[in-house]
Image (cartoon, rainbow, N blue to C red; front, side, top):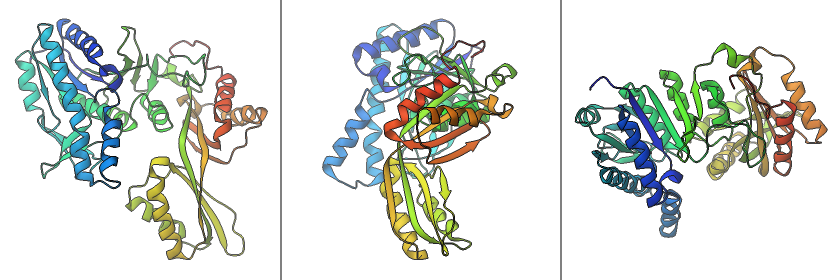
Length: 412
């Protein structure tokens, strides 16, 4: 491949929602190529196509086979890449579109949540050497049985970052419908501010805590291999948010953002026998079914039994309840109850590693708003609380004020 900068660009579904937007994306891609760069483009399905396909599957079967669901879901991106290639041809540049399988994206055998095992880049490099723009369908790959697999929600981000790693790209641009990553969702906090820079760790936490700008798995891969990720708008030329390794100046900012996740559910297993190994029995069974458990709390033992509560994403709730009820019966525990009227509210910032009093300030701000905290979890750079969903947005605004996140800061 010739010595030019290699840029991977990913465009989400809203960026290619209709023919006019596809043409606009084509123009942007061509401008990058004419600036002297090699360009690999990853594209999501048009607009709400993925949701529409899910709805269509649901009209046929309440429990569609996972393999067939992946066959169906992967078709959305195939439409996008072909249309974008046509739009680039209309602008006088050469482009070629591929499915994930055609460019050698090899995954494991899990349908719906597949993990990328390897990418054979020979075909992409060969096309780039011919001077072509390469367009790859996001969200999909192929397992060793040559079955189509999909990478889960937001999987096109993972495709883009994984390709950037495999091709040793100089940067991975994630184009979306917002101008970058904000201190909080602007729909909740009107004076939320766009962040110029974030560390991988901060973005990982914010993505996993509800900031839906970029998929958490993609940031994990970017961090592991040191790929800079630039989150920016496909509708304006302005700079977005650059996600890289932490710099000293970034650590001076105690809290970078507030995240709110409303698609949480709390599950409680009553009267769990209070003896060693019971928690291991419950959570091993959940892990074996690929249920991602978030917060966990165990109440004080009473008369040889205790209650164990934990949170999961709402999409995992049906599977969680099946497993939890089976485990509860097997270990001699009581009823399994659920609460879907909760939300997870979090503050994130790498400066929390070296500053004290952050938790106290957070809890004081919530106390002033008379918001009760039901569960708490922490890491080096994050504090999360479970609260009533009806109070969550008010609490998010209070935390945004308490940490002065609406104020412009140097380097942020």
